[in-house]
Image 1 (spheres, rainbow, N blue to C red):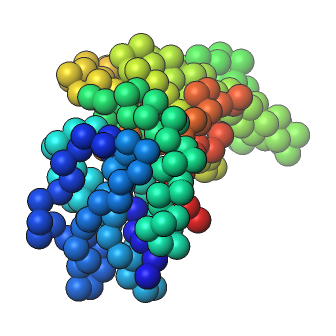
Image 2: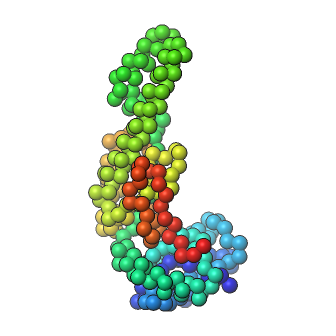
Image 3: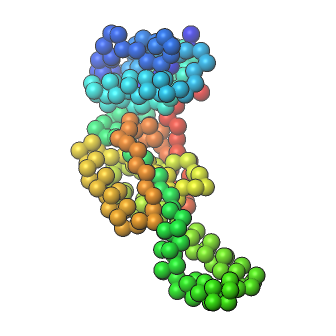
Length: 259
């Protein structure tokens, strides 16, 4: 029977009370696997597990309950090992890393910020900042739209200006929010995102973080900022890119214990 892993805690963690269940239908009882001063919160893994809402919520529920009794390194949904012995092997092999991460993440939560451009708003913003583009647009409009070359020139200028604005806004999101966080890691890229960044935040500092996000929204109304959290610090279990080469375009770590 494969072993489903929810998270990893220190040896002193009491584990979950009897009767707590996790993923699967019927839901599998949660238990612990202990090795090298660490406690893995696990259950039997159901066959054919898929990311259905019921099981996603069960995974989260187990983690939140476990965190009530001490820091836990969260594994992402679907983290499965061949058996309990394999879990012990990983705990023994990577014990030093897990202990360091537990100490580093204690008292902290994760927030993910995804930024996209509001298309009409960013065009207005760019035009207001670029009189050369505005003048060319006005000249084309006065000439009934302009000829092919003029329209092409205007289009190229607008595309380049919007791309430059994407880079500027991604940098602004990173620079502004990192000031009120403990750590930062870049998330997976997507063509529609200006930025996709996860921030590690002290629990006592969550108010300051969300206020910083609200100030960004007010300062840059052409940016659509979607905030997800507080979450278990999934993105910080493993080392990830603290700063993408081009902000918002690098891939973070998965935090999985086994494939």
